[in-house]
Image: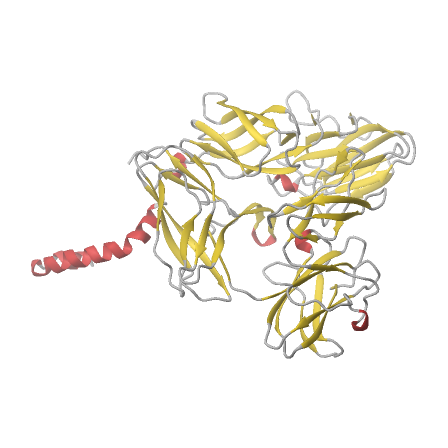
Amino acid sequence: MVAGFWMKSSIKKRKTTLMNTVNCRALPWLLVFLQFAIPALAFTPVLSSVQPRGGQRGTEMTIRLSGDRLYEPEEILFYQAGISVTKLEKAGDEHKAIKATISIAPDAPLGEHLMRLRCKGGLSYQRSFWVGEYPTVMETRNKERTADLNSNFGSPQKIEINQTIQGVADKEDADYYMLQCRKGQRLSVEVEGMRLGRTLFDPYVAILNSDRFELASSDDTALLFRDCAASIIIPEDGPYTILVRESSYQGTGACQYRLHVGEFPRPTAIYPPGAQPGKALEFTFVGDPTGNLVSKIEIPSTTQDFRAFIKNNGWHSPSGLPVRISSLPFHNEVEPNEGGKQASPAEVPAIPVAFHGILSKKEDKDWFRFAGKKGQKLRARVFARQLRSPLDPYIIVRKEGESKQIGNNDDAGNGDPDSRLDFEIPEDGVYNLNIRDQLYNSGPDYTYRIEITERSPTLSATLPYGSRNNSQKWKMISVPRGNRVGRVVNLSRSNIGCDLSLEANTLPSGITIDRDIAPRSINTMPVIFEATATAEIAGGLHKLRVEDPKSGLTGPFEESIHHIEINNAGTFHSYHDERVSIAVIEEAPF
């Protein structure tokens, strides 16, 4: 096309006008393309590992961040409150390691704390650091640190109760830890392995007595995904041994784990599994060897992800149990409710409403009732696996007293085993929803929550995958001073067709965004982030949103990071947030 313009001088003026038009229209996409030309490999710091993998509440410690191109570190961005950095300095002269002195608050949330390293040249991938209640002890290894010294039952590493051990499950490796316990004492163990987000690692843990007899063992758990936990009441005084290994003995040097050994409670489920924001609610924690535990917990005022921790005999469980927070009124099941005539509650609730229950008996079915009006377009949604229940739900909706089904559902699709059913009410009346496990399994921890609401329009946006098995690629937005960076944003609309605009709640000082309105027929849009030449080198976690300019309806800009994903096997440890990492970095040399 360009050659055709200069071949004839008589159309020189037309050529200039046309090229200007083409350039203007292509500019946003050209800038998006040029993001790949910005020397990301020369700028972006690579954060490969954080050691040690966790620390104790209320302590100050030094961690080592290793990787590449760790030039001029500025700060560590933590996604959760509770950890502050008091000192940040390079370790060595090759820019491959950084030492950070961190202070962990006494009330820092237990569990996973996500982080990114921000250097003058960019933002790193997201990594994790774990907070626990116990001091950390390292697994003993030889002087060359090539092998451990606790691979035989007869020569275990001696530990104390109420400690966390950081170790490695090498290939064909079995790690043994021995401690003294007394009769009637609760001994609980929990392993953070796959959840450390480093590699595909399926840990196994067992509690053995002095005769090497297994008192309890665990491989996968519904609550902890591929990680494991076990808990017993000690039958008699004496030594007990904890065994940790990769479940199929296929470990590697990257298969690190944190083993919690203590007197902490280890329930496997919580009931009810849902609550309203800003209210205190009494929960029953199910599955601890001492029996069910009851605790009243204050619920936060926001509908964010929430995990409930039980404290018993002075100790918390290392990881909490997910609770769904929603403003919907809810009803807990009232037994018996195995049929339409026994459906609960007795007083029929209107939509919207939520129900809670447990499929505890053999081949259990639970029935609920609600009032519907003709023409209502409703959605019944089950929260079970999403809340780490072992239940694989199957639901059916009928008009009360009739056998004809209005609809049924097993899985919501896209890898979600929880049920989701969209249906329309044919006439005014009372309707039943019954739920069971797809394979008629049941148990005291088969908890669930059902929400029935009118279908409403929703919006959302996200950054697309950069490459296969690497969900983090190009998820950080690092803008050089006096320069621009482009991104293509994926748009999602449900139950609505509308134009969309991308808006920012906050941005780093000196950064602006340039975008056009995305027409209703378009599900992607180019966005340009631009930094002034005098913008301060800084960054943070910022909320973006998409908005319908006409109705004012808004939706979140969501970020999903999969720390472990293996081709068709899927994802094994993920983190979801509505904040994006954005930073102003040093000038680009071009």
